Image (cartoon, rainbow, N blue to C red; front, side, top):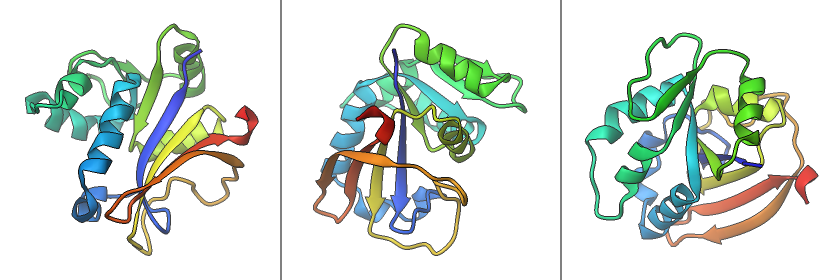
Amino acid sequence: MRRIVVTEFLTLDGVMESPEKWSFPFWNEEAATFKHDELLATDALLLGRVTYEGFAAAWPSRTDESGFADRINSLPKFVVSTTLRDVSWNNSRLIAGNVADEVARLKDAPGGDIGVHGSCTLAQTLIRQDLVDEYHLLVYPVVRGSGKRLFADGVQASLTLADSKTFATGVVALVYRPARQR
């Protein structure tokens, strides 16, 4: 069975909104390696509309020596949206129906991890439906005070720490699993 892995950049106060405004000063080789290894372990992407549109505008024209761009461009992409009608980025497929049912089918299909990057609304839906198998959280030494949070008001979860790393810039990589998966 495949796993749903939610991967996010978060501030200390849990904000995930607009990481391009606060994460870059803390980016280093350690963070790049973490994200590269994470992407290599991923067999598909599950994205919400906003993240899909941002990725589809940026990644197809990028190249790099590490192969990150080639990997992200070649992966199957499942896009959850009720407003999009066309998903033209390579290997993209639209999911417009029941998200829980569709994701359950994806999890039952053969293959490796399915990565959810950004996609706040989608991630919150997956959390509420108990469909997340692992969280990869890069926590940055920044406090935003307000903004969209991964764990919305009212959401409760018990998690088990599976791994942690502290990077030289003060970013902490935390890998959690729902307590149901001990």
